[in-house]
Image (tube, rainbow, N blue to C red; front, side):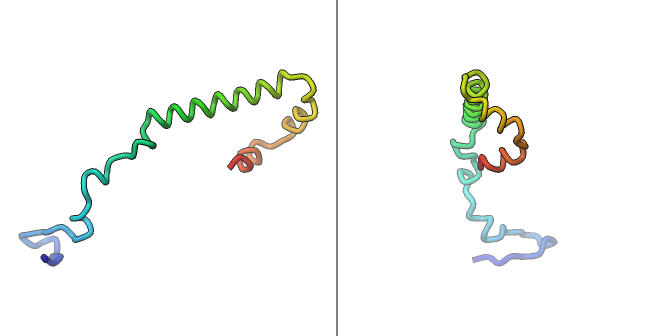
Length: 81
């Protein structure tokens, strides 16, 4: 087992923690790919638009509309988490 040597030494072995990282460990997981993230964001945007359209267009939801009109967006975002 080699020991860690200062930077100025002729032979510089890698630290033991870095030597054990495989290339496959550095790849982005499939669930975080750009395509999947874009699909999820588009679905979320469509869902939000559908809810806004339902609340805006359906009769009988005046009470909900007035509550949402007085709501602060920051509190709505915090409540959605």
